[in-house]
Amino acid sequence: MKLLLKTLGLLAASALLGACFGGADSTNSSSTSRVDLREAQANMVGVWSTAPYGPYPLGPLTQENTPLPGAPELASFPGDQAVNRSFRMIINPTLGGQAVRIRLSNLMGTQPVRFENISIAKGNPLLPNIDEATQVALTVNGRDFGVAMPGQELITDVVAFEFGAQEDLAVTFHVAGESGPMTWHAVSFGPQYISPHNSGDVTDDSVGTSFQQVSVGWFFISGLDAFNPEAKGAIVAIGDSITDGFMQVLNQRWTDRLATRLNAQNANVAVLNQGINSNTVTNARNGFAGPPLIERFQRDVLDRAGVKAVVIFEGTNDLGADVKAEPVIQAYRQLIQQARSSGLCVFMGTIPPRADVAFGWFPDGPTVKEPERQKINTWIRSTPLIDGVVDFDKVLAAPGTPLPNAALYIPDLLHPNSLGFTAMGDEVDIDAMLLRCNLN
Image (cartoon, rainbow, N blue to C red; front, top):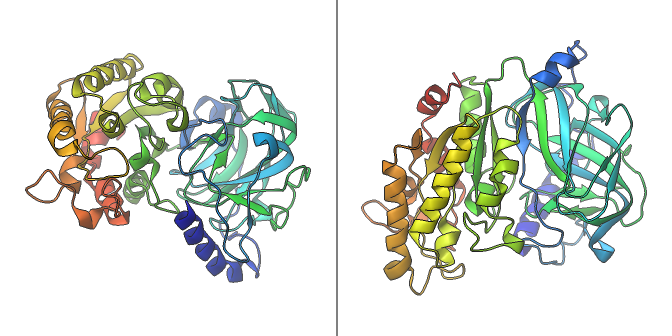
């Protein structure tokens, strides 16, 4: 986490000069063209998402560290809750649109949370300023506030707002009063901005000077749905830290690469990332790792808007927790059945090689866990239950060996580096996926 915050601090410093000359780029301002909001409401597709869990501060990589001199203050939450303060969350949708709605989650809450003055605008990936000319208010049942009940997700009304694919957006909102336990996604691998404790509603600050605290976590926000008349649907990628994009800042995940490729050929298909660091398929872990895949599949896949396909890519943390192949495969069967029952196309990713010490592979990895990994991958490659395979094992292995290709990994030899993530995104057979999943 310390290395991640330093990297983000340096990136933010390099962006500061440009920010001094004005707000975020407004060359593609929000459209004033008329959008039929009734049509939009009936045809929404998820274009960005993150898997909620918690409550704060529960999650991986969340220890506090001293920021760089001159960097924003790290976010602090007395009593582990938000009290009368504002949030500006930066997101990067994988497909553009003409109208939007935002999802705010109180999944882990124990009391109602009141969100006020919710808005969306063109944003900045490194600083809290927004393009004020593009800022659009979001209502809930026509009101300028909404209340998310414990365990529930609040969805705003649909509003006209035009934006492009993979364009940085800022979602701003005020939490009135005390939030109680906060739902979040602990690691966005990018800076997120929050006003100080009990600082009030500063949502109209387009320059961003009121958002004095920084975090790498997404708080409350869980999704952006959009209307795009050309959209074919969305693909959900669900998995663990390798899908979440471990330590690869500013949208370098394999799912971002996949979205870039889809956009390059005008596929009009969104990619939703539902990875959680340390997550497991089975109940091998819980708490900081989020709910296991078998428990969150309905919420994080089937309940998203406009989903037509899912890529299931998870299991390495089960092996690290000494789970054998058969329980993982049995859970896969259940997930595939759930997806099929909802009419979804199913692709699966093979489990990549690993040689880490810190995360549970050694000392018995090569002799005990590796055979189980091979059993799982053999099943994935041969099962007739799915529509296709993305062979991440093949692309990340050292040629001719079952070992990780060190050139494609960070030094922990569990997580890919930026080259590895690019190779993973390139491994997806887009043409086959679009054809088999009726997305062409």
